[in-house]
Amino acid sequence: MRSTQAYHDDEYLREVWILYGIGVLIYFLRFCVRLRTVGVRHFQGDDWMSIAVLLCYTADAVTVTFTYLLGSNVDWPPEKLDQFNAQQIDNIILGSKLQLVAWYTYTALIWG
Image 1: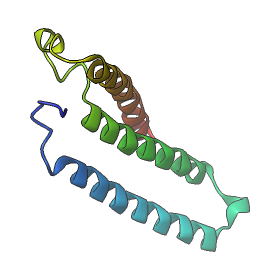
Image 2 (image 1 turned 45 degrees about the vertical axis):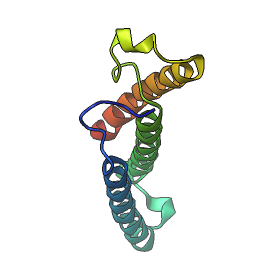
Image 3 (image 1 turned 60 degrees about the vertical axis):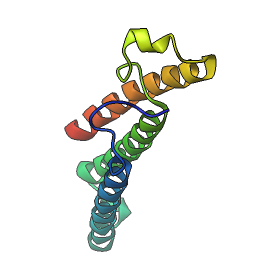
Image 4 (image 1 turned 90 degrees about the horizontal axis):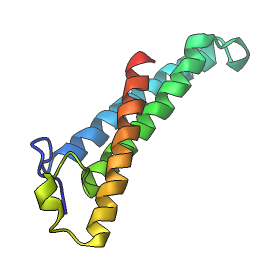
């Protein structure tokens, strides 16, 4: 049971995880350079903030993946929901909750 939204195609998750991998690679390169140049004892606020941003980025990628796989309440019209069984409805409820987490982590990622 996948979503019917236009952004759901076979390449979507691949793109999410490729971009995540590129972002994490850049982050670790930056982190290694900062460790070599100043060491952990002299980290500044932006160094610690980058760790929080990485955590938000990871949470966003994971929740987007699960939302994509489970579906959410924005994916289905109300009249279509009557045709689903209890397990499918539970998946949609969980996907909807994860969608909210994805929105908040993405907002934190942008502001970080």
